[in-house]
Length: 417
Image (cartoon, rainbow, N blue to C red; front, side):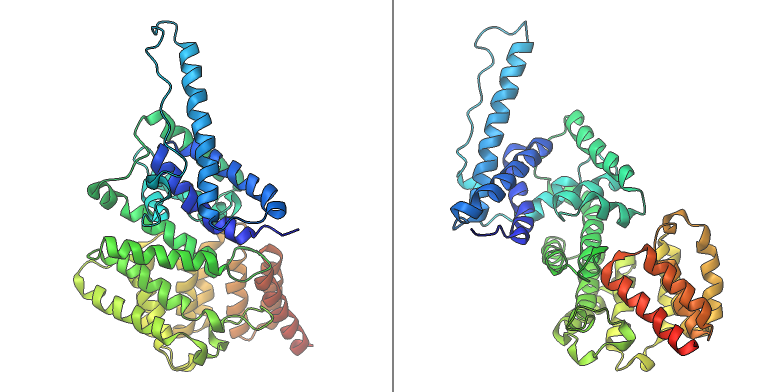
């Protein structure tokens, strides 16, 4: 008996959902229909074999489910409407499941779904959360970690977002060029979060989820083509390319994490670096500088350094200083503290971390303890570093990060002993 390719289903889900939503305009019902199609695939494909065109198969099954849904809704409204004249409400004519408008390969349904999900009835935070589910395929727990909120809070937010779309009466439809412009900032943030989850998985046995990071880059390229004059769209694509260029060097053959300063830089993708550097070089002189451009500039400084010792840390510190004033993000503050330590010494960096101790967004994160351990190690205080590394290892849900932190602690303990 064949096994269902779970990764294939995960990759196809946003494409299928995009096609069904584009055709029927009802996000919640379309999502239910697609989930039913995925269940049928998981049930039938192992015994019947996967179809030649899995995407078309899933769309057809979901479309049939949507046809049943529309007929049921029509019948319900007919029963509930006591004042409607018999025959006035006609059962809608449903398009065939293999209609060209539904199955067309030329349409990038994932990109379309990306813009559609940033619905005007929602706040930007709710739009982003909903889109991460629909387009990124992230779990509620993964999205909650990205927003630094409890999983239950995020589940409620996503549920409310679906309800607001339904109540608003605003069609879940293809946005106009003006609407795409209004939604662009939310779209870019979604892609940024999808890429981050792909580049460093927040949980599980794998360090990265290449399917997610690769899809984020593909969509970022598509958005950049749609808005070639938008500096932040270019900056985000540059950031992704410059970061992903290091992917081959950041894990050992066994999947163990290799930090930036220990990576074999000959393994870095120089073509991706050249493309990213060119993008950010073309973008920065245009005028107003955004957060993605600044992060891309920081990544470029790292990528262009021949060795860790030759990294231009004063420039990186200056860039993080600008970014910190622009974005209220605890991860930026952590990185700024590291850059400060590299320029002014570890104690200067540690002093900045005390401000973050009361930040509720970092209460359950391992990163504050990990950075504090790193700076204590640099300051020559192994006992404090060991305690911080062990505390961070207990908090992380990523096995490669946990193993790396425990090995750091063990190495220091051995040396200290």
